[in-house]
Image (cartoon, rainbow, N blue to C red; front, side):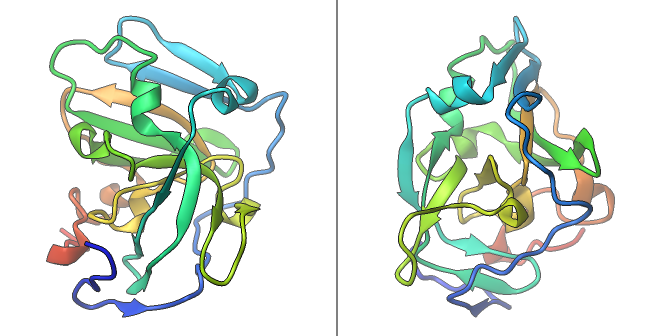
Length: 196
């Protein structure tokens, strides 16, 4: 799908910053990441635990519901599948909710996604990036430092939770932050699934 502009989008070389609420201030001593929900045993990971996991580098196109698209950004992070491998899922898990900090609440933001679509190299919890204009650099706090999900290009970018704090595994789909406000549950930019 590289460099294929979805309908209603325009291309930008910048990575615009859009977010709700306060910018999370990272504190390694208090930050952690939880894998919970439909799992045999809940797991909580420290920042150092996360950073010891295998890394993936992938180039992923980004499409924002506010109509910008950015091609050719390369990210380094932990593939979501690496985190899935740390837990034993209950039978019938088909969805996840990716949580992130929102105004001090570690579970205040969330986005729902189908699990199967996230098991490739294009669903990454990223911490650094580069593009044609920029060499490798950490993502900024405004972009979600220390850990932010970049979803596959088949989802609008609001599904890419900033300041990620955990994954809840689910058997049934469930609305996240923007979905509760009327945004699409499936969010495919190529089908212009912006709102319900």
